[in-house]
Image 1: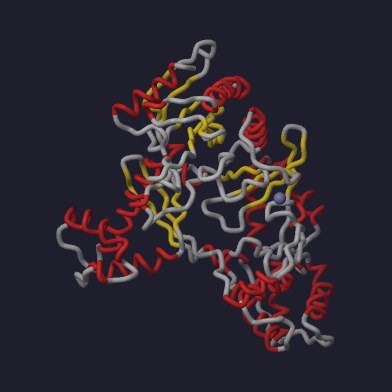
Image 2: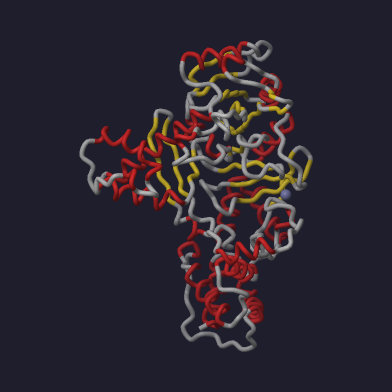
Length: 503
Ligand SMILES: [Zn+2]
């Protein structure tokens, strides 16, 4: 069986373009070594693979992992060790980084940026660095709101660790190598119980502002071609003049991708503030589609089209053919915002020496013009809102209480995995007219359901999930309204205008 698996895997590697026919015997021998074998017979009916993307790679790897577990090659038969080992298996099919880089650069030069990223994105899936079969398990839907079609995803592709692995990770020595999951040193790294294996990972170098950066896809792809662009040095995130320059240097080289940065303060930033990086991709979010609802001009920058975007958060959009002009105005806006206090609007630049104002910037190319969206952020906390005043408030925590980072800001809700089962249970409970307040798991959703259910009249088995999904979208709209520093009422609009007038 295992030799048949090895034969099939090598056929997969060839079909996926990871290997050449000339690599066949060599790769079979490397795999035999990994599985502690010294004998091989080519199967009589080898599996023919025509389309790598459709092939059941998960099923094949499962059989190989079961064999490894049975033979004691795995230290423990659990998801953490299985993921470490199947990455090692896949790595034997991969070309070296220099070959991947040459291929990418050749495509870029001869056929353009899109051809290069198309190839690299497929490659990153064929290598199993992006685990297609896990991504396919994520729950995804679109929800119509007054701000456009929001994307909602319940992320199930990050494996939940078993207790044994958590204990092993706790006891494992704290290593400083690689310094984090975004460091260059992850390329080819075997991983350990508290760090994912990356032998099947290949990074494309890009030059940004004269420095070396890395370009890769997110292994958890939240949206199409979700990429990460990261500094080759492990230095903290910072929103400053150079951030805008770097964003546009990337968009200039990859004009079919948007790219944005998380803000540089806790609560309003992303989960990794310690390593300078951006996220981008080939996807148009609801925020990018949202129109400018009020244009304005800034003295000295009359050539720049500027406006406030119709969006639950507070977004200024700048547009111009020359991105250097956009950067000049963005510098003015950032400097002004950093030190801006408007007590009437509960905006404080700092309290007790702690700075609160920052920006989440997103850059893109639209037609002939460059565009920059500047999302105004503030991370102040109060006794009433200990997690943040401009953060989803307690009444929305039954759906979302995590940070509102770049991806959410743009209109994609990344919801916790617990919601998959909770929403399913909720659908059943609604149909059974169960008292939610008596249900330990569903109690937290009771207020919400009581509020929306009367709108729908008769709810059936066929419509209940549709209704819940639509209402989750509406909650997400509110989540973003809470995160917006200026509310969309008269007072909020007037306060936003005061800031604009001050420019
Ligand atoms: Zn790092």
